[in-house]
Length: 180
Image (cartoon, rainbow, N blue to C red; front, side, top):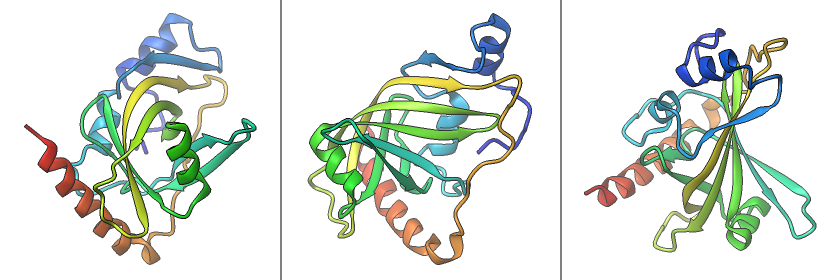
């Protein structure tokens, strides 16, 4: 979701110059970097078209992936994210029962792994999606100097944009009610 193919964010520069990143993920703390918060903050109406991967694990520790739109992953602040997940999906059932997940967020030329503790918001009334309030446990960045990522996975938006924007509008209003 980054428009620049060159790593230009402070946290990427720190990891690159510190010698800590040799093509493996490195923890960058327990809060969203400013540039990611800016892309996911609830007040931002225009969302970039990029897939966000939601990973859950089942009772046998087998991973399950759900593909979310940036309209379904909304930040309240640096430490709190809201997720909209289809109610009938296996990922939603696993998220509800396990309470943990990882988001893979494309932040070219790297990806971020955002580990979350999540709790279902029972007051959410949207019929086909369940709402989760999630606190960030850890954020790790994965970047390779030898093979930086140059493109990201995107949705064909024309068939889903209206639905996503409708759900996003409801979620935005919900988050605004929570603000002090």
